[in-house]
Image (cartoon, rainbow, N blue to C red; front, side):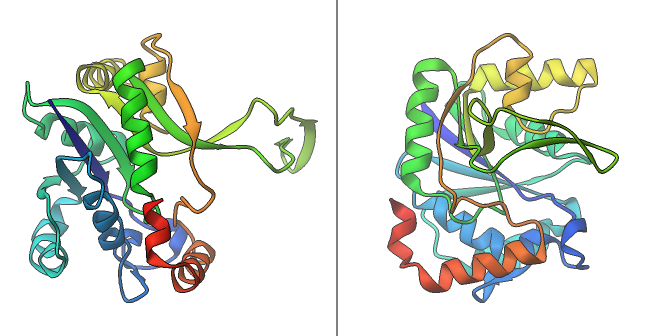
Length: 235
């Protein structure tokens, strides 16, 4: 039984303020999604990769970006949906029945994921059925209403969710089907599993495992990739 990775690259890049979708913006000379593909491809426990992109980008991704990379795993291109959740669901349905044990879901705009992070997440998902990476809240968190602070939250039990998120294949497929039937849209895949009453394990990720969504994020990512040895991202 294998591990299938779904890379979700359907973002519009609204917060980036650019006509170019954020996943295709250049980071150290090549699109962010290419860095992410290479990172997932380097993970020994992943057997195949499903890259979910907007329908209009299928040909360009195949002919322009994927063909320019030296990858070792099979890359399946999948046409995405309207919402991120729709795109993930399409990726899940593209996986062959009876072949996959664990599905790893990862944002295309988190290029600094390490294979250790993926392997730890997959190992826990094999035991508990569901595991995601994240980071404990380090800043002071406030609940704000109309610009006024209502309450200072206890940050100790609060974690910031990241990807990768790994799940048993049947569990995540069932969670997505339930959400579709209920017309429920979640902000990540873990919440869909939580709705089934299934506990989700959280393990520590990395502050480097950032999601690039704004120009400031892109500038910070450029600094990271220029100052950090490439092999550090395999740890």
